[in-house]
Length: 201
Ligand SMILES: [Fe+2]
Ligand SMILES: [Fe+2]
Image 1 (spheres, protein in one colour):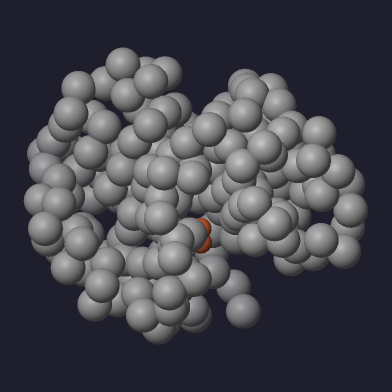
Image 2 (cartoon, rainbow, N blue to C red):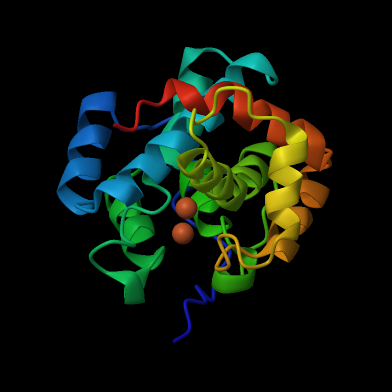
């Protein structure tokens, strides 16, 4: 099954700055994503994106929401329409005349799957957080105290252990960090600090 998008242009540049309201985005999220585990993943990535946009990029609230919304919706079609992953959500957001940057970020969250390279910082951070956030969350679930006391060393051990979260591509995680030009250690630290804010129980 190929998920290649076979295009690199998304949306209409005239729609720059158009975002969904938080209410509309959350409604779409709840209508499309029924799997609670996937919901957690998307909320975590959304929170990491928002945190990075505010703490590292110093973006205003509109900019932060654009990053957060891209994270929140990046897997919106994965639950019910896996064969149309990325295609369906991008076409939907295009029909709502959303800012092209949002669709581009979603389209490039898996360059090896969708054939679209991350270009700007928002694209690159979405790619960088996606898989690593999931692996770190899986690690938290097997620790007696969850995220409490988690450190880089423990995460790196899990990264080296191929049987742990075996479906998570280590090459992709390193590739994403390289493309974002961020040390893997710094990325791990950021996730350990920010991810626990998303309540998962
Ligand atoms: Fe995905
Ligand atoms: Fe994802």
